[in-house]
Amino acid sequence: MEYISTRGRGGRVAASQAIASGLAPDGGLYVPDAIPKLEDGELSGMLRASYIERASWILLKYLDEFTAEELADYAVRAYGSGFSHGDVAPLRFTGESTAYLELWHGPTAAFKDMALQMLPHLLTASLKKTGERRRAAILAATSGDTGKAALEGFRDVDGTKVMAFYPVRGVSETQRLQMVTQEGANVNVCAVEGNFDDTQTGVKAIFGEKSFAEELTRRGYVLSSANSINWGRLLPQIVYYVSAYCDYVSSGNIRLGDKLNFCVPTGNFGNILAAWYAKAMGLPIGKLICASNRNNILTDFMRTGVYDRNRDFYCTMSPSMDILISSNLERLLFNITENPELVSGLIEALAQTGRYDIGAELTSRLAGEFYAGFCDEADTMKWIAKVYREDGYLIDTHTAVGRKVLQDYRAETGDETSCVVVSTASPYKFCGSVYGALTGNPEPDTADTAAKLSKLTGLAPPEPLTGLDGRAVRFTDCVEKNGMKQAADEFLGK
Ligand SMILES: *Cc1c(COP(=O)(O)O)cnc(C)c1O
Image: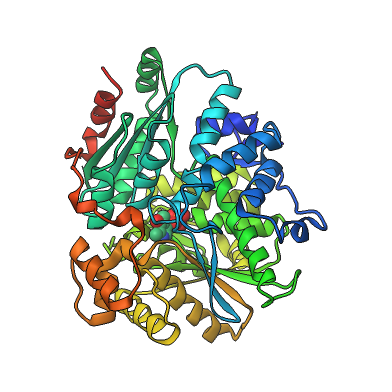
C-alpha cells in the first residue's frame, strides 16, 4: 500500500516515508491510496482477542512494510504496562443502547495516549526503514492533552527530542502542571502568548521554513510532527473503534453485523476521522455524531457546507476542543471527493479568506454519514450532573459535550441505534469544572479540588494525576507567537 497527498503533488510514498515526514512536501496530508477492508470473518476473529492483538491486526493492514512481529512488539510496548486498565480501552455501559468508550487509562489520563504511546515506535522504526540517520525533532502544538501525551510518549526515546508549545491561557491548570513538570532528558515545554490556533499555525510555520530545516539538517535533526496531521498518529486511533465494536458485540447488546453509532467530542477532527476510516474499512457503523463545544464551527460546516473561521474564539471548560482550524477535515474532503485540485482550492481559500464552501451536493453527502451538534457551557455542566445523578457515572467536560449532542441527535431523528460516546478524558483532568457541575461551586483545578471530588464521589483520581503540585516545575518559558522558532532553535542546540 502506498500513501498519497491530499493536495495531489506529493507523489506516492511508502507508509514509513509518510510517517517519517508527517506532512507531504506539497503541504498536504498523507492518506492511504486505498482503504483496506475488513474481510469476512475478521471481526468475529477479533471478538475474543485482546486490545494488543486487535491493534497489531489493524495496523498490519495499513503498514505492509512492517512485519506482524514488529507491530505486535510495538503494541505490547504501547499498551502493556502503561495502561492502568487491563482492557486498555474498556466500554462502560449505562444502558443497553448507550456505552462510553473510556480512552483515558493511559499515562496522561486523556485519549491522546492511545496514539502517542504508539507513535514513537512507529516513527523511530519508520526513520530507520527510510534510511534516515538524523535524529527526530518532534514539535507539537497542544490545546492541552497532545503536548503532555507527546512528551510522555517520546520521553527518553533514543534518537528523538520533543518540544511542546501550549497557548498560555488555553490549557487547564492540571494540563499545565502535567507539562511543566515533565521528566526526561530530551524534552522541552514552552508557553505561547496566543490561542491554540496561533500555536498550531506557529508550529506549521516552523515546519514550512526551508532554511530552518536545512540548518537543522546540519545539526543532525529532521523535524517531525506529533500532531494528528501525522498518519502515524491517526492510524492507532482506528483500532479503538474496531475494538469497541467487538466489545459491544461481546456484551450481547448487539449482534455481529448490527449497526452501531459513535458520538465523538471533536476539535481537530482527528478522532472522528479515525472513526470514519473504521467505517470505510467496513466496520458496521451507522451515523458518526460530531460533537462540538461553543466553538461550533464544525456544526455549522456540517449543516451548511460553509466552513468559516471568521468568528469569535471562546475559551471553554472543554479546552481540548477550543479549535477553529480543524486540520484533519482536509483528509475527509479528499477521501470523499478524491479530487486533490478541489481540496487544494478549498485550503487556499481558507488561507486567503478564512472560509470555504463545499456546495450543496457534497454537503448532502456528508450529511449521510455525519450528524453534527454542539453544547454550550451551561449544558456541559448540566450533563455532567445528570449523568452522575441518573447513571451513577462520572464524566469529564469533553465527554459531557458528546453526551448532550447524542441526546439532541436522538430527539431530532428518533434514531435509537445503540451508540458509543467516546470518553476522551478522565473527569479528574478537569476536576474543577466537574466538581462545580456536581455541587454548583466551580473550583480551580487543584489537588485540593481533586481530593474534594474524590470524597464526594468515592472515586480515586488516576495515579498519573496525583501529586502533580508537589513535583518540581522544570519549564517556565513563555514566548510571543513570533518567538516560537527561536525557542525551538535554542532547544535544538545552536
Ligand atoms: C484532543 C481532545 C479532543 C479533540 O480531539 P480531536 O482529535 O482534536 O477532534 C477531545 N477531548 C479531549 C479530552 C482531547 O484531549
